[in-house]
Image (cartoon, rainbow, N blue to C red; front, side, top):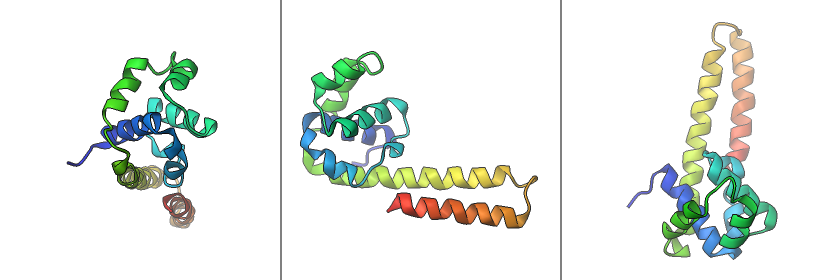
Length: 135
């Protein structure tokens, strides 16, 4: 079964709440920016800064921004840590695709106001940044 973008984010955060020791393995693949919805980004950023954390610490720290019921739902979305590496790779792929589309939209929006040389320079700069973040 293929998870969609939101389900992947939920499963990864849920996994990290259940298995906080997996934070280093996930951090080796995903950056905060790879989570495209603010609530997931907020929790992941907190977990990175704390070098992991469980349900109670996250609720105590972020309870006003992310509800305990949401966190419980995310934890229920994940039943085994065995899928975590695959979920991380899938989310990274989606994140890379979103970045490419955003890059294309940015260049496209400058079509009427930039020279082709400026657009090429911007494209090269953006693709270099994307290549670094994709690896």
